Image (cartoon, rainbow, N blue to C red):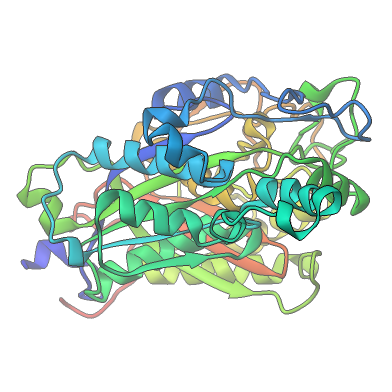
Length: 431
């Protein structure tokens, strides 16, 4: 491995060579990207079941997705919707990467879900209540368990390397990407499929989040409900789907002539250790997480061209994240956006899907606007991109994901870095 293929700490660089997404904004990367750029909210009345009696009867659903495109119909029936999303996005990411030609024992999967196969669990709870224990499906456990998606992906590809599940609520898939990058850096794997999935648009889940007052209640205008960083924000809109990134050792990707979208440059993860649902005061945990990611990337804050915010549209989260951004970047923070105004909050899938958007911003030099951001909150002194996309310099970006339980994850993603021109690099050991 040449020096060019090592990072500032002498670790293997981590290339991103494949992307796959199943989302309310589209089931392929370009459709997803164009919808996000348009800032068209995908929130609408729920169609998968009768939600008319629920206090919140709208969400951002994935539409026009046929899992039998990827898995035989018999197998689809043995997969919860959450795993159906995962297998589609992962297969697309691998196809996008081309022929990786790797030893299966050197290929890993790191993914997860915040809640797992809750659709199956709810259905089987009803089966038990109406039919007794003999009515419970023998497939309940393998369909419900949070690691089902990682297992299915490993079996689909025949990959026998490291395979494990991450479940850190809304930080899940950002953590999965970061941990996947660490596996390549420490030589545990050459290839890692990293991401996350979620399918939580169900009667009980919606009722539970509503009872927590986490959801927007704008039932008369669902398309206006999610409004990150807006002064009138009142909660998030539930989303669903999956996002996966194919991570690969950089020198290997170059050797096989792969198209390299960019790199995982840095990763931060910590915990607020403050409250089970509320962020730490002043966003101190989120700020420390971003600083950790910058240090891991060997970059100063000045190198960052854009922040893809967690930006849930809840009063406390947005305020804490804005304060955290100010702590890290000072009085003139980089432009900030949240894609949740378009796709809703995809919980465990959010980090990966938003990382894809962040990577495209970094490499294409354009930031999507934050949907429904009409009136700035005077308490949040950050530069929100709103109204229309904003052109920026091609530069690294930070993608944030913060989850219940105080779990924080920040990724620094960027175009393939020219080691001969390390702008805003922190001095590090020679490789």
